Image (cartoon, rainbow, N blue to C red; front, side, top):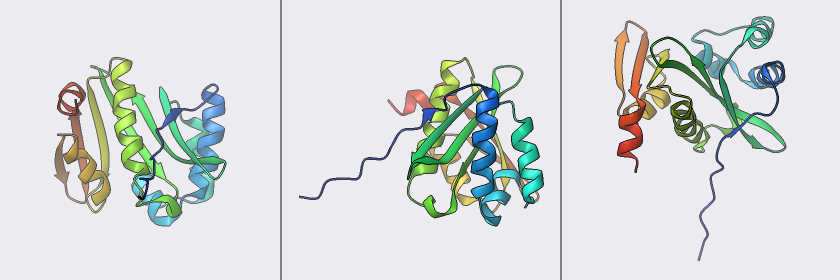
Amino acid sequence: MLSAIQQPHATPLAGTVVDWRRTLGVHYLRLGRISRQRRFMTVLPDRSVRMIANRASPDIVLGIKADGRVIGVVEVFCGADNHAEIGISVEDRYQGQGYGKTLFMDGLVAADRIGVRTADLYFASENHGIRSLVHAAGGEVVQHGADCEAHIDIARFLASSD
């Protein structure tokens, strides 16, 4: 009998915001052209990616490791009214293996733990992976030209996944 491959759970990145920025910078630089476009909604040169990482101030960063390094992250940026913006990225060679889904689901659970009630995502309309994850979580997608925004009621998502 074949055993199922155990998908890892995302775990909080160790350290402080300064440590997270360092890890994010290394991770972002490993993203290919399309992955950068999916994460930042535009293709950015290395210099801009480093600048974004150096200024990042997420409230939560969860990562998934493979081959001895962080290969995917979910970042939660808390805002007003119990909302948080969520960003997800997975290195190119690890995409299509369920890591993004794991990061997304674990990120919603972590956001709930700190009192976030609504997860907000902004993405390009051709990003079918995120669109699919949002729909699976019961979220609503609103398209504005080539861009989309999505809102997920985290309590409703958690109740439906029990």
